[in-house]
Amino acid sequence: MNETVLIGTIGVERLEIVSSADRLAAVEAAWTSLWQRTDGLIFQSHGWISAWWSTVADRSKRALKIGLVWNDDRLVAVVPLATCRRKGLRFLEWAANSYSDYGDILVAPECSQSALEHVWARIWSEGGFDVAFINRLLPDAAAHRIFAPGVSNGIKLRRNHREEVSYRVAGEWASGAEWLATHPKKTRQNYRRGLKMLEEAGEVTFRLLPPDEPLEPVLERLSELKRRWLAQHSRESDLFQEGEPILAALVDVLARAGVLRIFVIECNGAMVAVSINIVQHDVMMAFVTTYDPEFSRASPGVGLIVEYIQWSIDNGLRMVDFLCGGYAFKSRFATEGVTLQSVLGARTLLGSLVSLADRLRQNIKSRRASGSEQQDSSSEDSA
Image 1: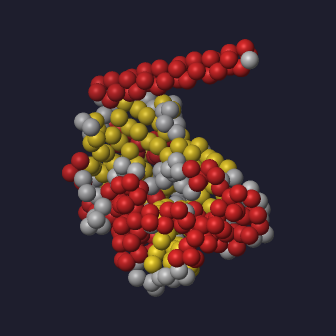
Image 2: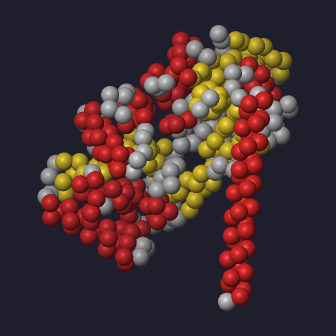
Image 3: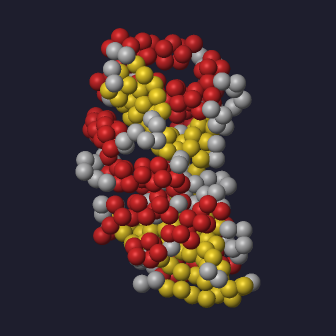
């Protein structure tokens, strides 16, 4: 059931909680207009959220909780949330959270702070979840306006210890070659050695796929390679499951928005490394990168990363953002890192118990870490 609630502020602002696929589809034009006006990231676009909702495999365990603020007939804010049941606990989190590296809300300048707080309070009061966990918040995220601890009266959110780091490559280089030259000799030698090993196996090509190249075979190859990598490392991901439509749906959103960039390294015409990237705000965002394990000695994945970083610099982009995920190559090439924060709030007794247990575990972990540091310090002093 969708509900529209009038609130009295300057002008007429209406609150709405979207909970059905039909209503989600109906607000596409207004949402897209707001996304364009506010220059939002693709992760907050209507296309991204609706592609996730229409293809998510376990939709029976989920529910939409998308808050909207209308000023007359003009949409002025979107708070894209959803609930999910995991391990017997109901979470309130970002819609499409599993596939969105940055979470945020969309807010037009004319939207009042009161309306934002009211729509968040409305979502909270409707319930349907035990714990609200809002993560991957950039320091300048608009979402801090409502999710910062102490902002919304009666809703107790606190900073959570779970943080992630987004590593980036940014600096003043005249060319990609100049950027590569700033790295240690060993790094440059390893990169060139990898390319030479590939060249010994056949003709090597690095290229950016043109917009008119069919995506299906590329995505099939990428998913096949990613599944093999995941199996080797005892990991799983719904995004790359054979027969699942989510990856194709999300990539289609990127293509339609004009922000898709797919880079490949080919050896004798076969793709040995593939990277699906996003370009927005003069930033190259690396969404998915994978490689053929049979060529692992040549490190084609790292080679592809070096190539698209150089391409980005040569084409005037101001930054390469590796997004989330703790892979070693990110810190190796990055020049800076940004910490993404999270907040947590318990709404039910079960949620409070889980939150308390989480805090106790973290306190114990912190004390142990502090004790180890003190022992190390004592050992150094004795030495």
